[in-house]
Image (cartoon, rainbow, N blue to C red; front, side, top):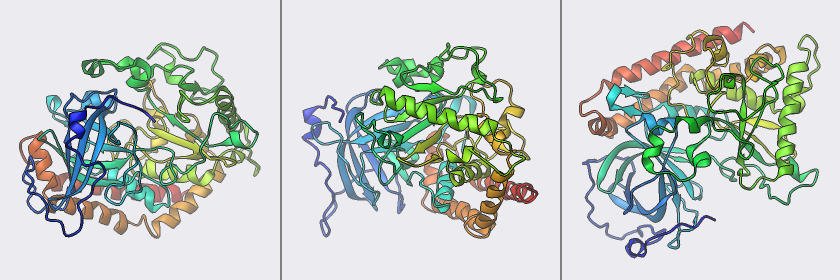
Length: 479
C-alpha cells in the first residue's frame, strides 16, 4: 500500500469512514450552491493543500443525500487525465479512500462494492474556444449503461454535484476506476512468484493508450502538465511493448521506443502494462504476455478466411471482441480501438476486450470518420495520426466468421436491450433526471454563465443514435 504525508490537524477534524446513524438529527450544512430539492448526491471535498497531478494530497470527503450526511472519509486526491487535463477548464480528479495514517482503505460509497479507487469525472469544457465536448453530460454514462446491458462490466457511474473547498465545481460523474478486482475487472491476482506454466497465464490487464505524464516524467510542478504533450508518447520497455506488426499487417523493421511523434509512429501499436503494474510485473510475465499477443496477431494475419478453419480464435474470446466492436460503433467512439482501450486475460483463459472507457468525444462529435462508415476504418480517413487503429479490426471485418458472430449478436441485442425504445428511453430518462434535479442549469451556470439549449443537445444525441442504429441495421443485415 502507498503511504503519503498527511497532516494531523486535518484528520483531527475527521471521523474516519463514518456514516450518519439512523434517527440521528442531521447537522445543518451550507452548500456552495443552492441545490433545492435535488436528488443528486452532493460531494464536499476539503483539502488544505494545492491539488497536484502527482502525488495525491490529503483531504476529507463528505457525501450528502437530501442534505443529510451519509459518508465521511479521509481521501487522497489528485488531478487526472492527460489531454483532457490540458484542454478542459473543468478538471477531473482521481481519489483514493484512506485511513487516518494515509494508507489505502477500502470504502463503499452509495452502495457501490467496497474499494479504494474512484474517479470524479468532469465533462470537457474550454472557455477560450467555447468548446464543449459533451453538452448533454451523458456520453460516458450512456455508453457504460449500454455495455452493462450487454452483460459486460463497465464502471459504475452516478451523477453528483461536486464542491471543493467551498467552490461549486459543477455536475460530475462519480465512477469506479478500472482495475483488477472481483467487482471490477474480475481476473486472477498475478504475483511476481507466479511463474509456473499455468499460473503465468493470468491475469493481465493491458491498455492501448497514450503514456501518462506521471508515469514517464515523475513528479513535476502543476504548470508542467499544461503543455507536456511529449509525455503522451514516451513509450519505453519498462512500461510497454510494441506490436511486431504495423497498421498494415507488415512486420516493423525499425527500432521501438523512438522519440515522441517521430515520423513513423503512426505505424506502431504499443501495449501498456496496466496490471500487474509496470513496477511489479516480472520479466517472465512480460515475456509471456508479449508472446501471447504476438502469436494471436500472427494467427490473425496468416489465417485463410476463404476456408472454415481459424487459429486466431485459439487466442481470443470472440464474443468479447464482437461486443467491444458494437459498443464502440454505436457510440461513435473516435478514440475506440486506438486509445483508452483495455484488454484483459485471466488465468487459463483467452484474451478479452474491454471494459469500454472514455467516450467524451463520441456520438458523431468528432468529424473524422464519415457517419456511414465504421469507426474501425479510421485509418482510411485519417492520415498518419500518432495513434491509429491496430490492424486487428479492419482484418476482422474481412472475416466471414467474425461478421457472422457480429450479425447474430446484433440481431439479439436489437430485439431487446438495444431496441430504439430502450436506447432512446435511456437517453431521455437520463436527460429528464438531470434537468428535473437542476444539474444542467447548475453546471452551465458555473462554467458558461448562461443557459444552454439542452433540449437541442439531447435531440441531436437522439437523432445521431437513431440514424446510427439504422445504418448499422442495414450494414450488418447485409453481411
